[in-house]
Length: 405
Image (cartoon, rainbow, N blue to C red):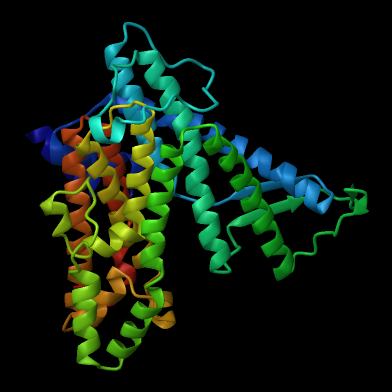
C-alpha cells in the first residue's frame, strides 16, 4: 500500500516524463507493475515503425513518379496506437504459451490465413505461438494501412494538407510516361496533389491485399467505414443545432442532449454492454471513431486470433476518451468558432456555466478512460493500461474556460 501511495504521488509530479508518470499512475491505481511491458512497448514501436516505413516507401515511389524528383515523405498520424497495442497483446499471449521466443527478427508480411466463421463462432483452432505472431504481424500491416488510408481520406475531404510533409531533392524534373513531370511549387494545388497521390498509392496497395483474402475481410472493414460515414453524413445537421443552440434556441439544446449526448443506438455494437452504451455521448462517439477500431479488431479475429471482449472494450473506450481529451479539448476554440459539435463544445452549450462545463468534460473523459483501464487490467494487458494512463496524463484541460481556481 505504501508503494502504491508513493507511486501515485510521483505520478502527479509534472516535472517527470509523461511515460514514467503513466507507468507509476497505472501501478498506483491497479497494483499492476509489469517491467516486461516497458521493453515490449519499445519493441512494438520499432516494429510498427518499420511497417510504416514500408508504407512510406511506396508513397515516395508514387510521388517521385508524379513529380519527377526523389522525395522524402512523412505523414503525421496518431491513429495507429490501437494496432500497436493489439500487436503487443498478441505478442504477450504468444510468449506466455511458448517455451522459446516466438517473435523473430524478420517481420511477417503477405496476407494471413482467414477463419471465415471466427466472428460468429470464435477461433476455429488453437494456433501455435509462432503462427499467432505471424498472423498478428500480417494483420497489423493491413490495419496500419487501412487506418492511415482512412485518415488521409478525411484530411483530403476537409482540405487539410498540413500533415502531408514532403521534401523534394534539387534538380530539374525528369520525364514521366514520356512527358516532363509538372514540378512542385508548394502551392495549395500541389499540396492537394501530394495528398491525393499519397492516398491513391496507399489505396491501391490496400485493395490488392484485400483482393487476396476472402470477401468477409473486406466486408468487415467496409461495414465499419459505412457505419462511421453514416455519422459523418449528419455533420451538417449537428452544426445547425450548435449554431441555433449558441443563439439560445432551447429546442436545439434539447436536440443536442437527446440526439448527440444521450442518443440511443439504432445498430448496437456487439463489443459494448449496457455499461458502455449508457456512457454520455456513447452512440455518437462510437460512430465517430470507436467503430473503426472495433472493425480493426474484427480483422484480427478473422485471422484466427483470440481477441477477448475485455481487450476490445479497453481499446474502443480508450480511443474515444483520447479523441475527447486530447483532440476535442485542444481544438475547443477552433471548433466553437467553426460550429463543430463535439462532446466538449456540447458541454459548454448544455452546462449552466463554464466551470460546470469544465467539470463535465473532465468527468466524461474519466468515465471512458477509467473503464478502459479496468478492462485492460481484466484482459491482462498492462501495456494497454499504461497507454490509457498516458492518454489521461497527456491532456491539458487547463486550456478550456472555467477551470476551477
